[in-house]
Amino acid sequence: MGQRKIRVAVVFGGRSTEHAVSCASAGLILSAIDHDRYEVVPVGIAADGRWVLTSGDPARLALSSGSVPSVESVAVAGAEITPRTGPGSVLQVSSPDSVPRDLGAVDVVLPLLHGAYGEDGTLQGLLEMTGTRYVGAGVFASAAGMDKEYMKLLFAARGLPVGRYVVVRDRDWRPPGPDSVTAVTPERKRVLDDIAELGWPVFVKPARGGSSIGTTRVPDPGELEEAIEVAREHDPKVLVEAAVPGIEIECAVLEGMAGGPPEASVPAQVLVGGDSEFYDFQAKYLEADTAMAIPPPIPADAIAEVRRLACAAFDALSCEGLARVDFFYTPDGKIVLNEINTMPGMTSASAFPMMWEATGLPLPELMDRIIQTALGKRPGLR
Image (cartoon, rainbow, N blue to C red; front, top):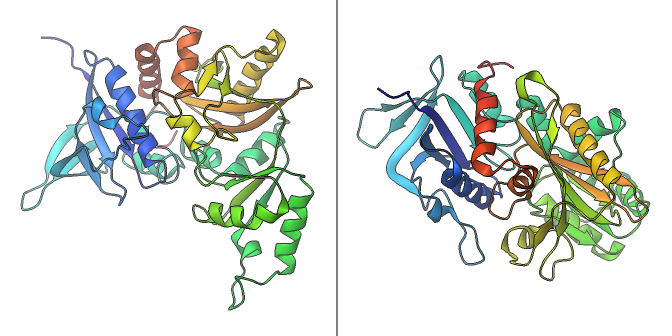
């Protein structure tokens, strides 16, 4: 009798605006995971929050300009899932007019969720409540990594080089009252004055968003308020960042083996394709000529410093498992830390698997390491 396979629940989709990206990440992982070693249970979270059993066919989860994947399109009819609390990490399937049945225990959850309600500590907290081992950052690191304000505060507290920014809070931008839409209050004026001191252009983005959804490059004051309102459609808290000249550099990080320090991949330069002014959603996932230069065309000592800073950023938030850290490299050779992603994209166009491939860790081995790292952790509070 052969050895029992490790049961992995691959959870994807979710309620955030990055639903399609999460589905595409699941598609790549489902095609790359070692099915001789792992029994995969594909679990989708629909846009309305329902947990459902889904097809495990990776081809149905591809993201392209003509195809936007969703959990609904691959859901198994009438098979909703509920994670049951208590020992055993059991998933329960319920169907209309039937008694709930156990799908069985899972050994570990791989939460391929991007953005709010999944990458932000909410799902991680639920998994800890159910005593389930899971891949990636814990509750605090996930929440801090999602909220760009507190992420940057923690980076700065560790002495890491971050760019200048202004936080636009809901109470300062649109205070309560019948004239709140048009009123220029002292708080709103202060915010606008602070943003003006950043210089132009600026980048306006949801403070707790990702995949550049809701992000706008603003060249002058005349377009600022509209850009803030676009970002506010996704998050009542908005971040306005000073533009940093130079090239965009990314670096992938893995938790160290056997309690060792984190390890960084060979970095990559983002080569933005199409007509995009910056690395937006279209350029990231839909432009065929967007590419990565691995390694980036910067001096060897700068590459070494990017890798060091990526590990320092990982430690600053107490990250676990994996992360991707994004930087700017300026014309005068400075490295500016932009942000960290605690569950980076895993699509065919994503830098994270490409960088580890270039470092000597192809995707099947990469996923094996990530899963084994999670299995080595104790369930519940870490």
